[in-house]
Amino acid sequence: MSRLLSVAAAQLGPIGQKESRLSTVNRLIVLMEQAVRLGAELVVYPEAALTAFFPHWWIEDEKDLDRFFELSMPNPDVKPLFDAANRFNVSFCLGYTEIAIEEGLKKRYNSAILVSDGGKIIGKYRKVHLPGYADRRPGDPFQNLEKKYFEVGNLGFPVWEAFNTKVGILICNDRRWPESYRVLALQGAELILIGYNTPLQNPAMPESDALSNFHNHLVMQAAAYQNSAWIIGVAKAGIEEGVMQIGQSCIISPSGEIVAQASTLGDEVVVARCDLDLAARYRARVFKFSENRRPEYYRAISETARS
Ligand code: ING
Image (tube, rainbow, N blue to C red):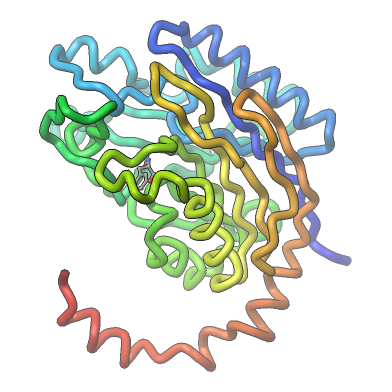
């Protein structure tokens, strides 16, 4: 009997910087309801799914910055989403930005949680690959200040047993780094959940702007095939606070094929039945890591290459 899992990519359109958590959480619940009606058992939301993607602009005042962060998870604002998941008996993955107090110090992370159908948090990941910069670049059409607003994630690349498989989470820029997928696949992950906020423009490299959508799918499709994993890529899309963000949310098979894709830049659900045994077959018959990888060679190189 195949291990089948119906997964929904729950894409979000723009979230205004003044949009209330209540309004945003209601949008998430509507998407969850649509996903459940389409048979989804797991609903995957984008990165920073509770607020506008505020690293796109300079925020001087700490109080202004902190209003984009969650002080606890769950909390009264997001509890209705947890309650809905309980009611619908569905699991979900939610990207959000968190403030944590660690060793008495206030730390900010770009995070995501995996919540089981009983509304229990079974896993958390904090974004490791923070793109952009920490200084102000007034000449750019928008900023990318993740290196200013967030700490590098300190939870490693965990995988969790769930849905009769092993699941990992990545966040946005992580998906551009092949190591991110490989460290999850080496731990047995067959399902990788990725939320993203990706501008159409990259002010650092305008000549690549025409390829933003191509690069988005390129990295995830290659990774799905090379790591024998199902990859769920979910966008916060559309023009958000003046920044055009790509959509193209998708569900990618271990074959590398896109089996479902969003066609709008707004709130949109796409669902696919993922055959987890297909991941196992690719892993056993094409990419059997234990028989074919040569870590002794990679280690030698990785200890020297630094640029
Ligand atoms: N956003 C972008 C991303 O990695 C980016 C930043 C865009 C980096 C294009 C390089 C090229 O999709 C986030 N939030 O990481």
